[in-house]
Length: 267
Ligand code: ATP
Image (cartoon, rainbow, N blue to C red; front, top):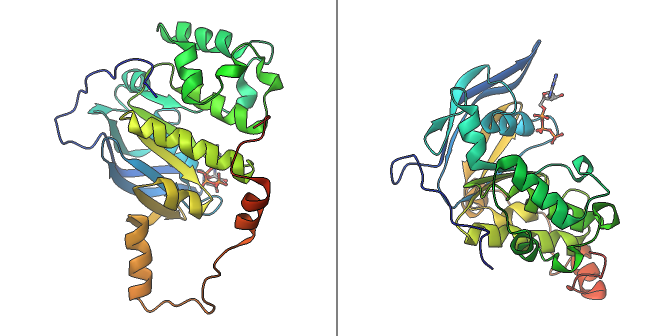
């Protein structure tokens, strides 16, 4: 699958992480929602932020995107300081919008053209729709799409400005197992195109499948950061043992086996 157009040259030094976050903080009144978060993301990496509800994942993501003011600390993307130059940062990133934000009456092609115009970019809607496997829906209105299709379309809309970094906040929440796997395929292709992906998720299987490294947040702080395998190995090294041996299959395996790996027509 080809990228919509070539990726622009990067501003940072070669070998510099594409995202650098240092001691990020955010308070809402008495509540410290983000309490000194630091991490780097390498170019081409899929980086996951995990954590229970209210851990501060979305607030962290939105500060890095320049969508929410940073109280303290710093974030740079592609060598550009988010606080100093949020406009330049926004030119280099894609943010997945909630599907409900779209104009329901426009077709997928019309919407992608419209988003392209907003960015002053010539987009190739059909290439974007091919990436998310929705070419057959090119002339359909958004309101006719299934939940999984809408989620994938929201990813296409985040790619119209050919971003170096794509931010996905819970990209598969609410999707059925097949649609979730379909989305994983799309995210892998985006990564193969050389883009960096930062995502949040509540699904540990998803993090293990997709992420090169994950940060686990709790109470506004990062409490662990490593590859999924290294985190599991460290747990076992600390003496953790499951009480029962892992079952060879689970209910999700039954569901996928009986209903098929293939997507349904409306997926
Ligand atoms: P979830 O998994 O439920 O999406 P999260 O890890 O993304 O949670 P955030 O949405 O970043 O968590 O919220 C962190 C904390 O900050 C929560 O306690 C939340 O209630 C609070 N919070 C978030 N936005 C605001 C706001 N605009 N005003 C006040 N408090 C807020």
